[in-house]
Image 1 (cartoon, rainbow, N blue to C red):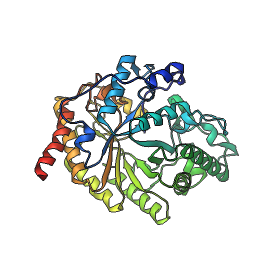
Image 2: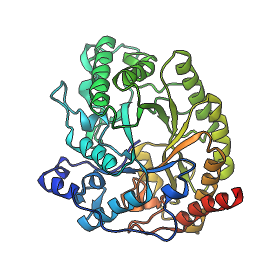
Image 3: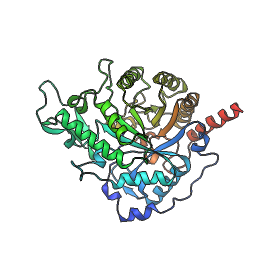
Image 4: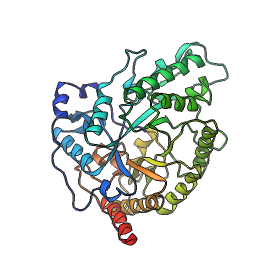
Length: 412
């Protein structure tokens, strides 16, 4: 998944090294933390920004957090969550912006992994192969594009610039080798440190049931087996890591059927898909126990652990029908102010989906919020998380804790 936050390499520096050793400002809320309330059921995590990982203040186009705010953000993550995912720093454009073995930039990703390990967290790697935020050099070569193939459209690159790839492209063999080398290098560096990887992200096409796979450059150049190969290479690099296929919009029955079709195909090919990731970018108008229960019930037919990878619930008037994950589209979804009774509706929505998670606790192993608080959320204007921009718990937090405590009392 993705975020609107613009990345600045200057986050990493000498000051950061000092900040990494600084203890976060104390933070606490009444009652149990999320990770404790659901500790017997599944892990509860959050995607974290580079500033949270490093402890450095940030001033960027879409994100501004003072040093004090960052320390409170870090304290919140440590207090409430036992699992983390990186918003951006393991995506190809950030970690491998230039071609060749000397083209890697490890500092930010290393800081992320170190933060998780130092706090005893389950660490997720996101993501190895995606149609977005992949540098153009990955696809470039000497082969002219086939006449019948149109450009796949604008592709988000580093810093969320976009490009249309219309020039000469790599051969199938060249792109396969680049993918293999990248996966072996990145997964190999964090072998034994990163517990689970989103190996391939968002490869399923939106829209009608006609096409299962998105018409990406990965598909055009390599073919549909690029997904199975990516899993093969990741397993070679770290046989003990949990390997996930991750996608969005699975609340929609059509998209969900495509997802199931793809994963079954990968299973038939012998690809080491070990868990499935459902992003769950939801809206207060549609998120409910019933809809989540139905989605999880159908996903369970795959017989794999389910990881809810990017949970948030939009409370803005804009985008109440959407469950997509496109960066530009989500900027529009948070327009128009909040819906009426937003706090109450958000609490009801979160309460419903967490009741569904508990019902399916035999399959659901991880639930990850896409952000620690509203202030660092990519949907910040939609106030989609359990904590506000000042790290104060909202009624939605109370609702989620109440689901856990009610379930515990019922089981006694």
